[in-house]
Length: 249
Length: 309
Image (cartoon, rainbow over all chains, first blue to last red; front, side, top):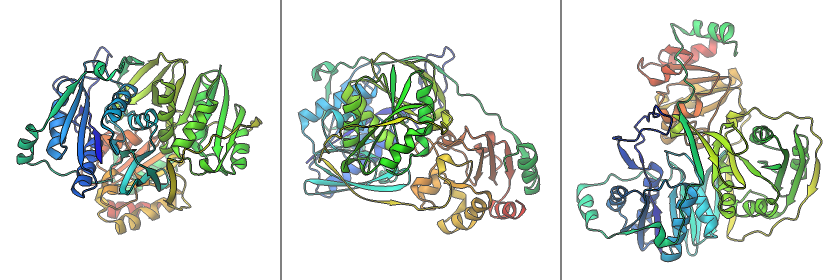
């Protein structure tokens, strides 16, 4: 069974982004870009499925600018067998990405698509579910455990009150939560090997998908600031402040 | 114009997040209807009818909705979606699971996690873990929205809406509920609690986490939260995680114990009314958002706090 893992190039999670002074967006010029952390977990899970003999081929897909090639090389260093870049300079919103992925699912016929549950830039948490809907596939979102058996996959999900397990018929879409696994460190020999793996580049038009954004960002602003308060010297003062100043207890 | 709120419920009662979503819906200036898709969920439908500001409740009942499977619930929403200008879901694990399926099938963009209604097509939402607020406008005919509950007050009681039974769609058969491990607790729910005490990696072990945090929570009648570091280390279960990708909370009082304050954690709690930080590292970023900071060893300070409250 083939496994497709979409990977997104995002501002590194350690970078604190700055809002541009003209309010048009956040400043991402010259900031470190990395693979979305949830996608790294998705890639790791797919590679583990291959190592267990469940998956036969792992395909990494990235949609976006030419530099997404770097993200795909990282994915291949983790263990993807090949990469597909859907290249465009258009701003890609989740619905557009889901449509591109749907076209690739039709073409590649994977048994599983494993995605990160959300990207840490737009925090949308949509693409996996949208792909599942467009491809008429069942979904197991926010996964903390994935067990493939026969033509089914059992997914343990992180839900608001704890954990929930669902069983899906394959093919299916899974989105990863933080506790699914701990991605491996990429080693130098694997980075070298990844450079030789096949990477195919397509355009959205090749897949017959219109990626025009549906949402227009009117402005981006700094959030309402929160100023630091006071330091209190001891517990007694803290209790006094909470009772008599903040009046919250 | 009429808008539809998709209720989160346990077939008996309506979950609190639904009430905040109704408030967001009411701000659109239209009639608010609520869909309760459940199994033997008559009680939940009746409860929805009593939410202030709700004009009508649609009740779809079938076994396939018992556990809120996304495939089935999304199909039900689509079956009743015609005639509604906006479909609003709470931005909870279940709302986030279902809403994008509905949006994709309608071929419209979803607007996630709104914190403010600017107009019928324009909304404010946080991006980059809340480090920036985007104002976005949708050009789609129908808007599919998830609502960040901390951005809106809970709707009150006192409504008397009619409950209309609607035909239930057939289950997809592609997915099945197997089971769940839901923590039973007498404490208030994390996202609805007035006071939250939250522990970080500095607690050092699951035993210490319980030993130190539980008495404080008991004393304050508080919910317990945790940082991602504490959850990853196994000190606390996943459903306690507060942060960008965990729960977003805004209680009256948030007490962070041994939490350094990574931006991902701050994203989940910085809208709290009063923040207290107890940390022995004077440089911890949590102090930059805390109203009251106590630079101290939590293993001494927290028990002392319990004693003095």
